[in-house]
Image (cartoon, rainbow, N blue to C red):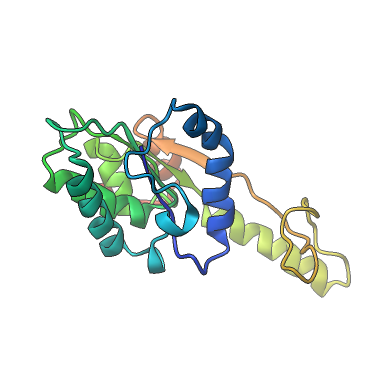
Length: 198
């Protein structure tokens, strides 16, 4: 398994990559999961500007240095904190000869159109969907509450510490998307048109 996260200056990677490593580190420590490159630290897995091109270049280097390939060193999974890094990893793996029939598990986040197309093709396993319509509706509720002199509704008063104070927040539930539910999740709900995913 290999690891990719986003820009080191973006606080989101502390939650995305940090949360993933909280779960996976015990398995890495026991040797159940093996990272051939040894690049499991946040700084090593970071991708400046969440760049697809930088992720692709790094994955190409990992393929070369670790001899990953459909007929070479086995690669079972690549953790990617979002879809732009997943797309770079996917591009590198396809160039190395991987096909949908032998593709490693690739994670993602955002359900970008390109990544949804990759899920349909079998070259990305899943993506987390954070529906902007849900986020916008919650922001409207918060603004309306503030405008009428009430407190904005929040459901989290512990998680987001900006080193000055804990910022009260309203957390919306993310949704797991994959080949089995993308149509109901993204097309039937009106988020994307089916034609956009062809």
